[in-house]
Amino acid sequence: MPPRPTVLLTGASKGLGLAITKILLETFNTNVVVLSRTRGPALQSLVDAHKESLLALECDVTDAAAVGSAVSRGVEKYEGIDGVILNAGVLEPMGKIASDEIPIEQWKQHFDVNFFSLVTAIRATLPELRRSSHGGRLVFMSSGAATGNIPGWGPYNASKAAMNSLCRTIAREEPDVTFVALRPGMVDTNMQTLIRERGVATMPADAHQTFVNVHAGGQLVAPEDAGHVTAALALKAPKSLSGQFISWNDESLKEFRRA
Image (cartoon, rainbow, N blue to C red):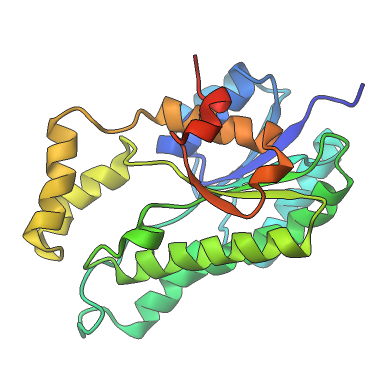
């Protein structure tokens, strides 16, 4: 029997990433290496409760040297990495593409986090995923924005579309590893709060109202629901899904949902 699997996760300090971390530890009995810019009380609580199976490292995902060092520490502690979840990302800046209020430098900074950090993480972890005795898997945390073309979200829409393209391409280049781009839905996290509070100034009224209505109607996705599917895919995604962009509640993912 191979040792229990190890999953590396970026963006774990709060929201969906924190929920995924807890699910990996407590539902799937997995070793977890988490990378996040900060370590809040909730993540620290998990570290205290899972001292042997959780390695939490403060790391800027745009820093290639720091990411490489973090991966090395994870491999040293757990003798490999079997799954990767690339969850770190930002929504802002919001505003029209033609607006001078969003300097091109802000676009570049956005892509550093939402796209180029993916390439950095892939390069750092791919050797471990290739040799995994569990079968290497990588889940990209994508978004409906990749195809939804939401006005006022130019950088975010474009970065998530680029993410999906990266997933399709790497799946063809690396047939021995499984890659999935997951749409988690409108998850009840700080990002949704940000959209409701700040989006009114940059989004068309009807687009903004959609997010307000989903929240008011209690229709946001629980982090534990999308998180369970994400965690399960990082451990058990079939090769048939490799390269696909798929929604967390798609019928084909029924077996990966929490009971």
